[in-house]
Length: 239
Ligand code: IPE
Ligand code: IPE
Ligand code: MG
Image 1 (tube, rainbow, N blue to C red):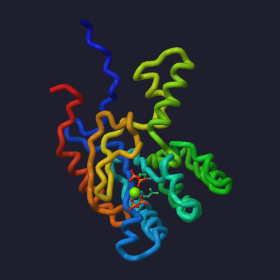
Image 2 (image 1 turned 90 degrees about the vertical axis):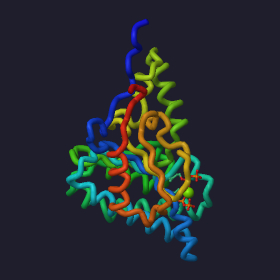
Image 3 (image 1 turned 30 degrees about the horizontal axis):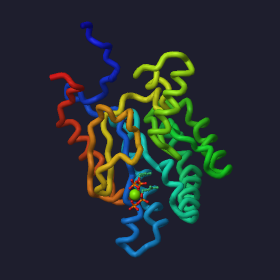
Image 4 (image 1 turned 45 degrees about the horizontal axis):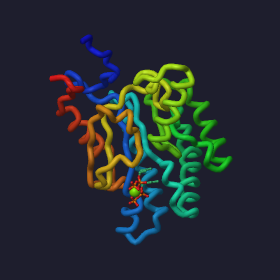
């Protein structure tokens, strides 16, 4: 029997190289705030600071792509107040940090359907996407109103529409089609689940779980995860 064509693209980490594409489920903002008897919004605010520091720290590293889970398609179940707080923070972050991101060559991308947020947020996001589109530094992908099952269903439907449904044609229609293969997936806050994030892309990613709550997660913690990745042997089903 002929060998089937291999569709799993090999990412970083082979022959000791570091990860090229890292994704993070940034969890634990609420518990961080609760521990301090603060409103949940404060945890989200601190969470944004952790994002800012991490993105800054990536300059000059071998990480080409960072993908952050900021709002899931299931997070609409939160209270209106919390959703409004998160939207306000998002808008604030774009206003305060876009200039620095442009200067640092960061290319912003969105996965998921951000059109569901309020019109002001949508306009700010679209403007940020346009103004960073030609940057050639780190690709910062933010998952907003993102659900992996929905993404896979959409990609499969698009592949079917084009007449060929295979692993490769589905991959080519995913929101992440133009990103390098996912190497390392980190989740903070001690939860050991994927919560509908990058389910397809995680097929051969290395997984890293830490108890650190997202607002406490520093660039040093990130480097620990990267170091742990470097010590692993990726086999992709081979020997
Ligand atoms: C992650 O923190 C941020 C979002 C999901 C938007 P949480 O808000 O889920 O924090 P916990 O899990 O309640 O601690
Ligand atoms: C996943 O965290 C979504 C984000 C981090 C944006 P959740 O806190 O929503 O996930 P569950 O509810 O614990 O699975
Ligand atoms: Mg959570």
